[in-house]
Length: 169
Image 1: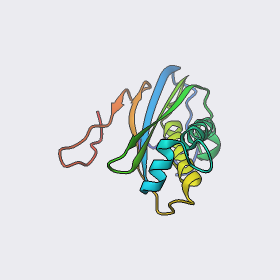
Image 2: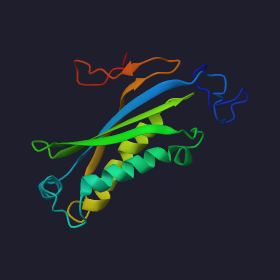
Image 3: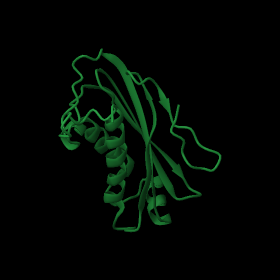
Image 4: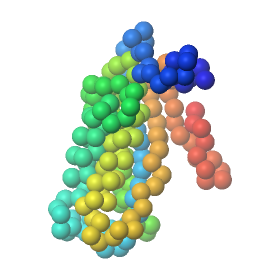
């Protein structure tokens, strides 16, 4: 329970006190994906979706969400984000659109939640813009890929030989 700093000694939920922590550069990258049908995949890849530039709108939505994380997640600190980028990878063979969100800040607490929120909202936006073509789209595998900086040090997610994720290093 020592690492569970969102609870006081009586077990009440509290915002962690980061006032004594040094200001350091912090970076986090989160990834996730959405599996779609062929019609959605082709419309996104060719830029012919009726609602417009799906990935462009999803990118902006994800960046906006990362900036609002402290308002969405209880007990999450409001941060000054110095960079937020969202990239997409289209995988035709699996009909999957992957989203990657990287967030940077200089502060006293990490940006993992901002990266996870950014990637999640980007994928939700793809769903929203394409749901007329495929209501069975599946958002999956949203996870922290990497973080740098802070007291706990760097982390990088590593694959296990059985295909399941490791705790990282």
